Amino acid sequence: MIADAHLDLLYELAHRELTRGETGTFARHWLPKLRAGGVGLQVCALYADPGTDARAEVLGQIEVFERALAESPSEVVAVRSRADLDDSRLGLMLALEGCEALGGDPGALAELHALGVRMLSLTWNLANAFASGTADPDGPGLAARGRELLAAMEELGVALDLSHASERTFWQALEAFPGPVLVTHAGCRALTDHPRNLSDEQLRALAGRGGVLGLMLIPLAIGPDRPNLERVCDHADHAAAVMGAEHVALGGDFTRQIADAVGTTVPPEQLLTTIPLGAALEGLAGPEDYPALVAALRGRGWEGERLAGILGGNLLRLLRRALPG
Image (cartoon, rainbow, N blue to C red):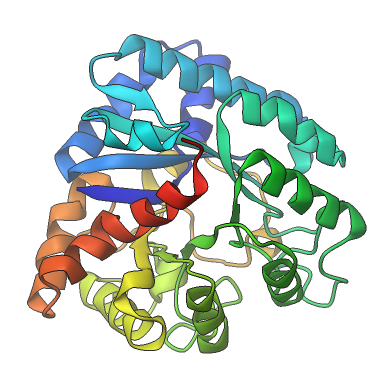
């Protein structure tokens, strides 16, 4: 079974439903692809573009999420507890990507937690009231309100995703937060030198906390010079060598279909790339292509528990620690 730590499908579906007035969008545009790829758990990001009403955007995406569940109740289930991970249906779990929707108030997390959010990243690329993001490498890192938010997360049982965090934020948050921590979508900086990727030192520290790295399966992270399955395997092998195979997972962040449907108005300096968001890896454009990745990993010698771990077991192990009973 594939467990994928990051996908912005709700961003696309909200655009289709709330802007275009389409209906049944999840069942038409994403469920067949997830089925074809053998995905059993999909973490669904809640993301709002910079400069928008982030709270309204996020609440709209949660409405779309609830409609997807209601329209396909025999095939999908919301994951809010450990018990939900054992459901035979496709599990969908909400994660907040960047905290702009909280309006600078750590106490506002309680509302989103009640609506099903079980994972949170302090920042997107830009700095906010809580912390500095990757686009602000010289920023102060974790703010006082960020520490308050981490305390609220610990109390509620929300996992910390350090994707998009500046290095200073990464280290400060890793020290300040005692709960389950992961990086849902990034690559290895030793192979592709991009600020969204992690250094070997960061990979080792993440593993030391029992965390996992979800490999981001787009050219930005894997490498625009060799955007293919072999290079994905290079990242998987490197991460396993540095942090242990039991700490490597998948966080596809497949953007081609989303970019084709929605486009983007976010400037390249905020995205930290000039690679089009619609760019995809050769042979791995979306979750429907996961069987090709499985075959490529097997060709590199990933088998048995090692293969099962990167495909889903390692992320599921962390979520069993993080989620309430």
